Structures are given as C-alpha cells and as structure tokens.
Length: 158
Image 1 (spheres, helix red, strand yellow):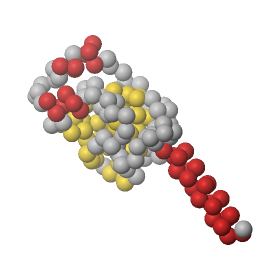
Image 2: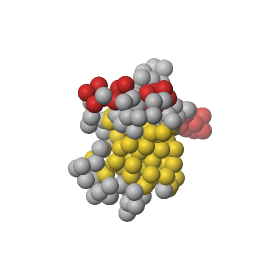
Image 3: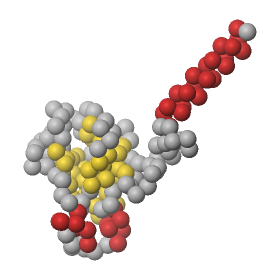
C-alpha cells in the first residue's frame, strides 16, 4: 500500500489537475469480510493475485491481474482485465462500469469490496451501518423480527 503523503499524490501530482480527483483519492476500498480498508492513492490501480498488483488478493478465484480501477474526472470506474471469474458491481456481472460510494465490487467468485468514504460514518447505500442506538443495523433488524415473531405466536395461541 502506498502512503498518500509520501507518494506525492496527496497534492494530485499525476497530471490533469481536477479538484474532484482530490476528493476521490480520499476514498477507500473496504474488504467486506475483514473490514480492512485500502486507500485508493493513485488514479490507476490493478487488483489481482499477482504480488506486483497495487491491491494484491490472496484468493484462487481471483486472476493474476483481475481488474483495474481508474479515476477520471472525479469518478472511479472498474474494468475487467480478461479474468476467468469476472467482476460484479452490486451483484450485476459487468465487463466495466462506474463505481460510486456504497457500491459493492465482487472480484472473482467471492471477494467483495465496498467503495467507502472514510470521512463519513454512514455509507451511501440507503441503510446506515449502525442504528441510532449504536448497534449494527443487521442486529437491530434481526431483533425486531424476533420480537415480531414472538408477538405473532402470543397473539395466535393465547
């Protein structure tokens, strides 16, 4: 991983200066299984199993040079580089496509990332990561479902 400040990219030294690109370089890819975040520190990044990739992935379902993320005019896009198992954006198979904050990028059969703005607490996906109580949203939803089922059983049998 490249340190943004050390690489000189914090000041957007890579050619066409665009203020939107400055904001986009603050985004990260969040590994949905480990919650580890990888900063997107330069305008082109290759994801794959090869250790020379900008974002190496240790998974046999991922090709050596699986896909490329590219930043242009403040917008991230992903392109499949001829991988065996392809890519998906929000569970839709694609050869290439735009990525927005909150989008899920699936690489290969099961490696899932989410484009995230680390400066915001809630992802831009319509559902907050945490409820107002501070508990994870999924836990609150399951709890509400259990309470609803208990109420249904009590109402039905008593």
